[in-house]
Length: 323
Image (cartoon, rainbow, N blue to C red; front, side):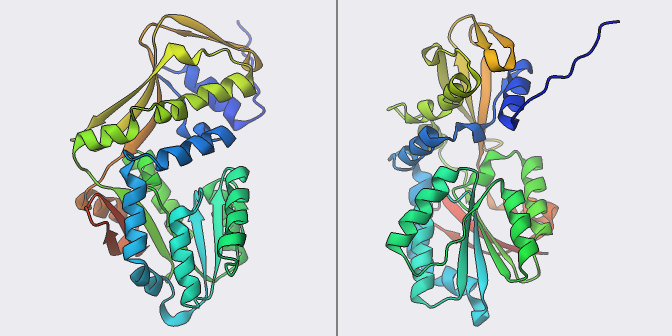
């Protein structure tokens, strides 16, 4: 009988790369796009004219800030403003400035998996809005959120912006929303950005810009495999490809092998064969309508308290409470 040996991995990145590239069809998680280079590429994406999401949410925060501030600081009680996946905080700074001007009693707790992002955000806030008390939390969303919830009974206002919820298929989104709900108390608020269904071409352009920034961002997962796991991917032999299904509202990103090739990843003692035009699925970006969001909330034990929409009706921020 052949002896079974268990592969030992030093990091989740190693394990997920091994699993994803030995699976069929192949897949890699979009969370591994992000390192110092990936962070910079995503900042560039958010500044692209095609990437309407940032401008749409920026519009909401610029025009609805007073109403949002009033909602968050209702009854003048102190609260923790917790942001999942804080990034550079460009949009959040509008809200933070307004909260400071209205003398709201709050602390800002940005959560991000990238220490580089948190360092940059903390540093910029010290200069731009020094009145804000900032307590960054590095780690995954739920590790950090559970830690915060266990340390204080203060009201929580949880931000999840940029339509990051769209990186999850509906069953995963329900699981995610349910886990957040379990960490919420009666008066807590959950403020979530949802990209809306719209002209399919607008969506395709946002995720496949002509300058190639999005392609470089997706391929950064291959760059990380090369540098961190001693891989030998030739990035020029892979094509970034985006598709969108207007019926389901699902946009998907792929890396497509342009030719037959074998990739060696020394640190994993792994060789990966690619047929010509074989794919690696890297990301989904889900788009929504009101009916779908109400269904997600119901399945997750949440209730829609209110919503805010940008001037072009392309994007919405929903505020949820425990049902």
